[in-house]
Image (cartoon, rainbow, N blue to C red; front, top):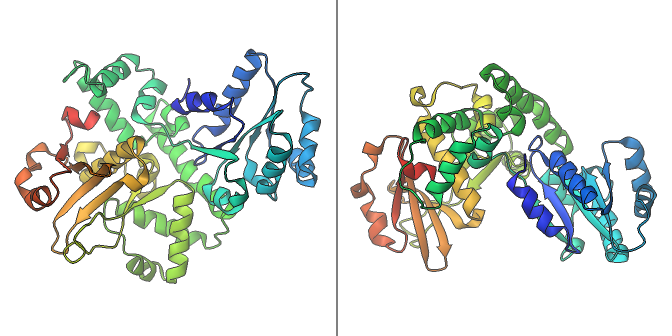
Length: 399
């Protein structure tokens, strides 16, 4: 099965720039790299694929970047492709890539992956500006979820809905059942491919307990207990204002340590902070961000809550987090904000589609709660951001 990102990477292969694929662990970066390698081999290109979790290769490349040519077949004409998995394990990935690009870009194309954006950000310094293009691989989106589940008919119907070809679909009951599973177990490929709920939960617990620990280790976090407690606290308050002072007091952390933990969680692709939208500083002076998880399966594993959606006490927050995830697939992070005034008026998301306006999105689990009159202050102040509602069971949520 091909992820959407595969086709973006394939399109970038002819470019001289280094192709850098980053994302959380277990999202399928190594699989994508192998698929690209197979495609190159089938096309008759000269290529090799290297995994830097192999200590012998890592040691060799750390000694000198040019040692990579020992692993590359000779090519009389054209470029050689070097696909490198887990580039962050190098002592100095910046220097390694810069030297190879500056000296050999005409005949060597580099495609590399890295598990932690924390490491990528710290070690990929400005010297690589203009030499690389970064692609981020998230967990599966809902369309990819249906594809991995083998629900091709439902996928086609969803795409028809999103393309505006139809307003309603006979497949909607099955789409809602699939979306419930997606909201409950998330989009990690290995979790999605597990057929039984019990095994899905076990895989999520493994990601929570094992792979997040590796993120901590590689990011230099030593206080494992408080780091996990922060993740649990954040998971319990998705969609709420994030008060770092309160968070640090609860965890008995310094403010600097709390900020560092949040930084690591963002750079390892687990959470994202949404900033407030305002134009009237006096009335809309809300500086605290809101927090959302990038995968709801991991979030639910942290709070250990896998009940059916309609029975959940957090179903409103769960839906709001899904709406954020969907918006993040369509817009850049800086385009997505929330609106809240000092006296408590709030709109979940304000999306700046252009410099002159966009749309506002409010999520309500029950459609009867979607009362436009409650948002009169916003709609009058910002007519250039027409308000839309997203509710469970309403086709608009699928768009």
